[in-house]
Length: 468
Image 1 (cartoon, helix red, strand yellow):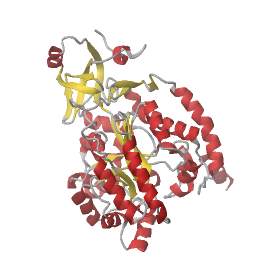
Image 2 (tube, rainbow, N blue to C red):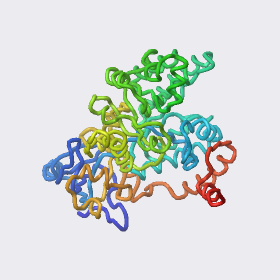
Image 3 (cartoon, helix red, strand yellow):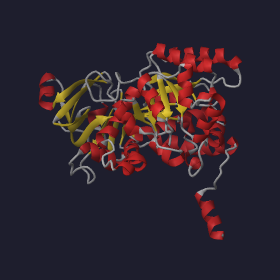
Image 4 (cartoon, rainbow, N blue to C red):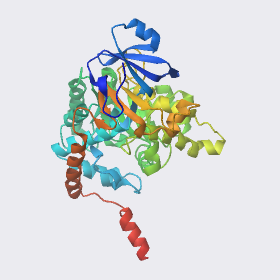
């Protein structure tokens, strides 16, 4: 029985399960395994092992052979802002803390239709880049957050959905914020793709009481709290002036650190703060592209790995390409730390591939659900074409995936056992139509948002330079 036709379509990959897939290799937690196969059944990996043994154990299944392909876990984005997709290059070349001048005005201008479309557009880009899970850090749009859940669900991506809890400057809002937080955590119980989370934009966005109680609520529910921590120098200095403590130290002081917390960015860290992360089990969302594009520093992720600190990789909504994210993760460590110390490996390819998949799932509290190709886990995976010039002459596949992989090599994306994308296009809804719809809505949204940019566009800047 032949596999999917690379020209005409995905063949039997869209059929009802169970389905036996036989690629050239399977990327397991311990590394690539040649001659392996998987059985996908009821949205999970039912069996994973040597192809001959799997075929004998399932005599009723005809193998779908996938020559020239690697089956690997889908990427996990530990930090995204799904309703910011209309902004795109508005933030390029801008100084830090652009959330005040770009993102908050933009999200504030979204209505129900544009919020849904923006989130679905971001989900589509993520799927095209090989992400099967994204963590949304909470929208500031004045809409029901369930619109974001619907957009993710309709796109076919797994979503850790943050709900903003903020009461700074008005302690009277605290009880209502915590009540809404409890309702949000209960709202998606049993949802196959949406996993509720709480979100505090920054430590200064909530009172000490709310910070402590969101941590407790999330811990009791087995969920996460997402907070931007130690991202920009200005935020660190404001915390020192206000509390005499750095942001991460302040969160520890109020009782908000712990396994339930995902500290987004965590770039400006002292040795003591690294110890706090390690001792409390707090997780980190390492966002290397965001550091390069608008940050003040690069998180010491290689040191975190050595110290046993839990962390995954995040895009911060910059670009939805899992391979380029893994490459940026290693590249940023090499530039920021490796060159100065003569470290030519900087964790090697397997570190960043692992943090882009199972490490991200573990940081988000989903390690027992997804992030690896293993029996019993959700069948969130990619079929990657390894027959091209970038990957065919393989000497070290993990390194090559990190440095030479790209989203154009992704043939298929599966979430919860269902084929969601085939060669970059959704299989059960109209992706190009969504992009056209988003383009029109984005123009109207940005026009009324009141975005403030420090720098002109590239074209305008070039004209000014030529005039001088």
